[in-house]
Length: 93
Image 1 (cartoon, rainbow, N blue to C red):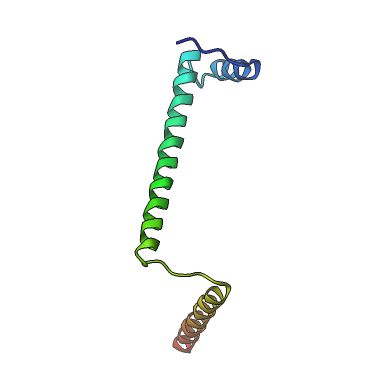
Image 2 (image 1 turned 45 degrees about the horizontal axis):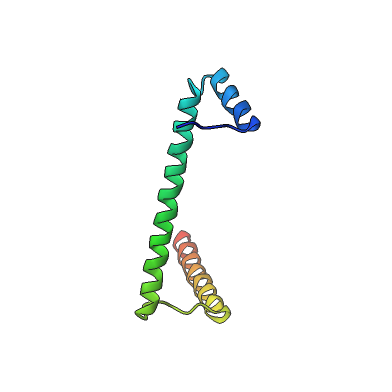
């Protein structure tokens, strides 16, 4: 395989070799492919999670999130926090 670098890529690879981060252009390409593979694996995981979420919603397992439900959730969190704080403060006295 013959890979042609752009001038900017050549400069980056040359700097990496001079700094000792890679030994050769081939090592730089291997590192780039490794990072690409990692990114693609992460992308595939995200797509699988999206598929799973869509299937869950199709089964009716989801929860509708609205401005009202978010506000109610936040109020519940605040209320539980206030109760916990009151319990902690009463225990200190």
